[in-house]
Image (cartoon, rainbow over all chains, first blue to last red; front, side):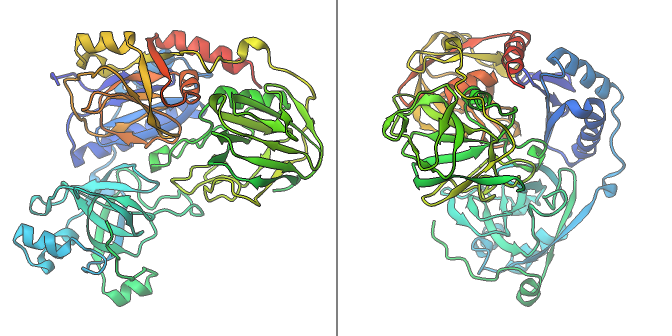
Length: 239
Length: 311
């Protein structure tokens, strides 16, 4: 794409605008996106229908009976003119995901070690040492795309996705990592399983992770994992 | 579920019958899809003809096959697609409020014209909202009569609100009943990436006839026709609005409907209007459609006229 001036407002139908803030994925984007979410909530009030933040953009969906696209655009321009990023990254909520790293629940763990020239222990150390940021939620309720994984752990998605990935499974795809909130199909390389409940319809806010949050995977033993309510049944790996 | 009464019992489940209110809003940032009626127009008219307010939960019947028995006297209306509906074996008049006696059976056979029928009962179907909505999304396991996104199955009983009084015999004006067999022109508000498609592709996009593929469901409808070329192949994933028409590298557009994923990374021609989505959702595989570019303000005026028809 030719260089464009950012931020930019792009039409997204009769009831939406896509606010393009950045051109590249970067953890430093997130304090701007979380600030934009908060300011849009204030500027649109009851006319706001939905907000969908994702990496570099925010989709703003408004009530077309309350606002015209032109009116919505003017409000967004005002918001952008005074936008300031949220406090330093360290101010974002830190979520810890207790994770059992083991080939029984992470069928790509040994493969990834071999591929990266590391021991299994080093892969676990490398994945759990970093603090990640949530870039976007999507694919399924509560599924958080997080980054960035160290370059040496980066790996392509499975060529053939699994039909059934157990809830809690922790995976890597490209330089991103994620945990599956519910049983679903999936193509990420699995290295472990978290005992954290990522999506709960009866909990305030529903999703444990929100865009902009900081996340750490904390290694736990199988016993700790089970005590925390994790399902330690080994994967039946049928693709 | 106060003031709910037994209403209808499922005697035979078809391929897909789902309760739908207007949709699940305010939680898309959590990766939760919108849901709601694929054909907003048919759903809205069915509710109106039995005196329900906008947003009341009605039943979306896809393809047919469903049979329901009344457990008490009810007022109902069936709008949207003609799926060969019957009332005790006799043809059931569509787009009209009707009285149903306890023990009578409403059944749907298979599509005659259109793909989805909407059955509303006076007082609405009652189900506990999940994340603020009764919209049934099978993939997410959210909403519907049991709260867990399950389609209707044989033996299920649907509760009906007792408060509202139905409007007996009201009929929708002929002008609002779409000709589902005809070739629709689907209004599309162009998006920012439209300039990334080459000129030939843009000409074809808005002049060719597009065929509805059999890869079509509540998530999206794939259209086949001339191959469209975009200078962008994939993008960083970004939020997808209702009706977004994305073009993957194979050049064949996909129009995204109510149960679409919340984010995606293909370039887009723009977005179909809500009423264009509603019309597309009634198309059977093999039917042809055309795309027509419209300005956002013009599309908004049409949408507001539609919404003003309903309370």
